[in-house]
Image (tube, rainbow, N blue to C red; front, top):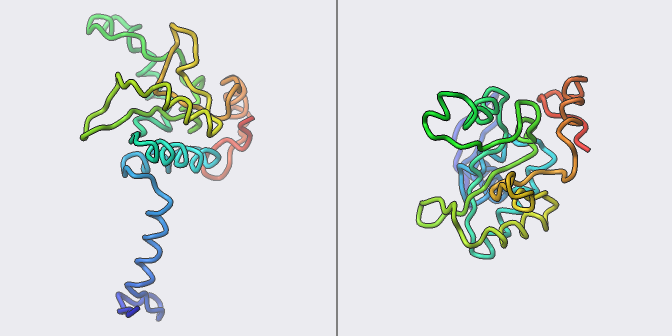
Length: 188
């Protein structure tokens, strides 16, 4: 394999071959969809590989998933929570889409993803594959919103770890149990 010097940094020659190998490794660890991968990279480190494995397994089974939501800021959570609740939102005909206020959603801690099946560049929100998608996600340890009570049913939603009340994450957040990147150090 021939290598060409691409540039020199501090007397060290960086070659095209070396750069290509680094990029190849990054791509091999990524999912099929760049948008999803960018969202996965913002998730809590404890669930990134789990999310990638879930999406890769779905792909092996012929279902191409896109992560449409991952880490969500508290102001973004407030906006979503307000849908279907504020006078302006109700006037627009918006329906309630979230039961969680800021700090009460696993999305606020990078511990949840919302996915949708993609086909020919379009999102299939009414896919007949939801049960199959849910089972794949659960096989990777996620709690699936498709198993929740009817009024709170949320098929696109997967969170980890399952069964942990959001109040515990909020308490840990308020206690400052965060790493140097702002992620919770204790999620169970």
